[in-house]
Image (spheres, rainbow, N blue to C red):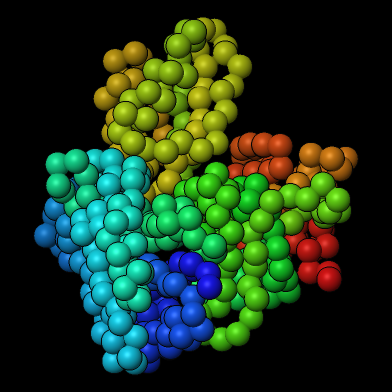
Length: 405
């Protein structure tokens, strides 16, 4: 008898028929003798609907109140799943983030889980009840509802699995598993039977939408077996595991991309030892995440500094920089929202020569100019014009032979 955490995303809960299908899967595992905890997202489109309503009322809704509104989506899902399970004869009970509780930091919209209360969950499991937990949300030390950001239900599921020392965490979604790239862009993309936590972490951070990066990071840190499975049928999905030294890995395992990047350039920043810190510190204090960074060689005591942020943070970042840097006499502060990021990821990058050369020569032949470059031990990312994104992904997927068996 295993303790298994099931997580179902919004597309798996889009209507009553799909909710019943998820409940049937849960019931089958429960009736097989396993102890099951379920974590759910809001129904497909519900979070966007609530966000849209909030923005009709205010161009900048108060973050605390926005969290209170958005958390309602998951609360509806837990009640509906529990109703379906009870109707099937499986005792189930729903719990929101405050009821367990799931303790978080107080950063609204981007909260981080500090602790998952296990007493309530353990009591329910011991009584043969299936706990159905609201993902994406928690409660801070002031008792306010918080949310974890997009994809936060994945993180909730892994955190619950870690707190309970579960045998496995299964992420059920609308895809068969993790692919070499998005099949909607490259129809020849191949399903990966397994991938390392290290590679999955890079793919998630570079734009793969299958799993939230924080969920992968937590699962790897706590050594929680993690599997991505289709919610609509049978299949083994993709197992996310640890690297085995005896395993021969291909140079590149996958290609990720991000459409919603924005490029910000500060032109003519006075050259000082703390120039980069003076640019990035106020951005960090506003909880805006910075990705790629390039500082150009100074000329006549001035330098240019370019970095990328999420496109949704671009306006706020530009306002902050205008306020903080204009008094210093910078020549210009510009934002470019028509950019995208392509990343190649693979353990073999660190041990195979020519990987970078293949990337740049492939893009060059396709007439795609590279604006920025960032690297890690197993990843190379480039920033390109958004219009060239899909062509670049398709060319690179072919160049690295990712469609082959």
